[in-house]
Length: 598
Image: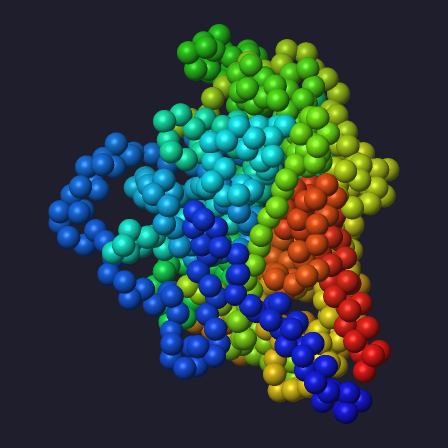
């Protein structure tokens, strides 16, 4: 076995696999670029990173600053998320790759229409939201009829809600921006107007398991009528996610990466495990979610008052009595009001079907032609500065370089709640969920089982890589923020010698500051009582970081949809976890094949 480890074939394979895990993001978009991840060798030579920010920032002279202040003087508001997860007038950044929730990047923006867009965003109050939507061909296809944000075009409608965390403008006019990817969204309609970039109304897309968990809770508690439970459950899901956003997305500034880069994955806010602060914060989050749920239940069941005929109000009035509150959360159900006719979602263009059946958005143009959805995700972790568990060969850490809601009348007739369409096209993988109804609910342990299976498959990959490793002292890079998602109470015991459990123990014991350049405390999410389904959802997205740049990840899925976009468009957490696991199993098969060849 020792001889096999020392063969050039084994060394070449390991280096190739490590390169696929830690190579720079090789894709360059015309409109902007992600700053390349810092080379470990370059940093060792003192070459530094593009995040060193040696360029003189523009706007430091009084004249330039005065001109900018005059130009953006009318910016007084920012896009905001309402209780139904709707964002009006959201600036849309349409580029040539797909971004997934849980990732963060430093963007290098140089196209004038996008530098204007981001400057305008940060001139308003925080949070600074924008939407990331994949666009084949990038800026060259902006404004073309074939790539309009409408059903039947070649454009993707499913994207990611992003948040700007910091922006710096350089002397040549380029912008370097720290951004974080928060949650899936769908573009409902495009309202660009006079802007040189896309603007639209979007709706957040929570994973179906989270919404169904709230449905079961609301029905069990008898708080709402069955016909209203789907709408309220979705609102509660959005509220829960936003309530935890502060904890799950630590703010990162450009200066944090001045020594070599920022982490590829969004770090959690630092809370020492087991401390009173952690317990207090968990209670605070639970109370905040409960208060939001209570407010929405009251609004939905009792109605609100307005200047019209009652209900959700506004000059046009709303439905009266116990239907009033529905106007607040069902605002997108009328096709005439929001231009939803192109979604073909029923007699009223009901967005509810769209929310639960992302397969509708993946099916391509109405003429049956598959849409050209080519995404590009690249980049990954550098070799870590983190802790190496004894015998595991895994390093933790690693960095990367460089208005109010509109309202429409609520439906007047009550209807039985529709069941989700549990089909292979809508869920993404498998149809075994079909036997579960909304009222019965999909058992949460199906998510936890998929989560467990992915972790153990990744453990197998690490073991196979270690067996092929010609240099045992060389650690395999592993994002520490990813390791922090490890369940501490899995549905069954971890296998004997489970690598990730050993790494977590070491990180906690050392109270580690992780990251090769921008340091942040290691946070085990279970220690701060982060909800299980939110934890699993984050894992289903960020686990793909271990596959970036490799041939397995770049294979196209059904209808020519690339892997990252396929993950983004998958409606359920369990299905997404299984998709990632399938890719990891493919990698494991290649590793076993090389081991057998010797």
